[in-house]
Length: 528
Image (cartoon, rainbow, N blue to C red; front, side, top):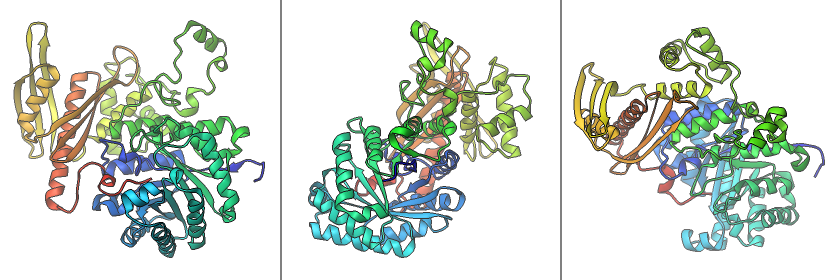
């Protein structure tokens, strides 16, 4: 392998494996928003979904293939003919498309899940790779659970699928079982055992069950892997996947160690993290590497003194490098042009109507806050996205509560028929009272599974964000709300979730074949 720096491809699977995170169910619009942002990050490949798993996932993958330019658009398929054909149809509109097929190769998967012999798995892998190659020149093959597959058998399958037309071989540590040293050794052995592996791209897909996903991915790069599969914020099945932002910054800061460079725009990493967090409802822990709230915070006096004198004393990267800093401060005197300019710098392209609505929200916020930060603007935009095409929306909320007072909420909502309706309810607390009043108006039953709240920025005037997750008869819906009044944010989030729940159930009535229960992927065999 040449000593010169080589290109490391980044395949992001947030829209496929990331959606397998328990409780996450992204809509087609959510997926499109994330795909557009991943294109801004400049990832090499976007794995857009699993087309065969449901009509909804097929439609989302096809929409992404049509609309997203730049990255290769990949779809996932099991080693079944109908899966491969459906996947090929979904990604066909993309200017650059990939079919990614997989089959379990470990004894546990062959015997415990597939009920297939070694030869049957081998033959299926080869035949479906060949079929995928009939539709696309770019074909990726994954022997699922590679880390627990017999090495000799793994090598045989990989060699045969390369002969059948695979252009990328992805080795998944599906259950996060490997350690960095043994994983690196396996890849080095594979290069020796399968000479033709040098003619294709070797990829890895590492899970985080032991907290080693990023470490294993980076060890793979040192062993010669030239594609790494990641998820934003490290989300994904069980404990998640290698985090996009961690792989990006580790390779950027240590080119002499890994010998690779990526084409990623690191200044978009923080924004991407926020968007995925908002749309999935999965909060980023404060101590998360690179994008966590504390990633660039310094509490110790010694650390603060050092950073003030020279940031390099306790910072290996600047907040601005990952897009966590703001170069333009907005306030109540800022005009529409300044807002438009700042949003453009942040990567948001709004049409006139969207800009008009955002400016109204911005002015309302600026009247209550001395400074409006990038995080505040992101919260505004996320909140505005929730009001489009809603059957009902919050018009007014008034809550009375306090010591020795029974919490009481008065809610007025505007419905799609143009009529405003009002209700009053008591509750165990102010949020409970507000939700009871909303329920009496909306008449959309649902069980509250999760309620999460966080401050968008510091200070007592900070914008608060609330995410809620509702469930009814197997259908899940996520809602998001933001406001300087956290009760208003909570009400907005609940109304948003109820709207999405009602929309999902209406779609289910019209298309009973569309199963809306959790991520579509969960309805099929677990994937890499």
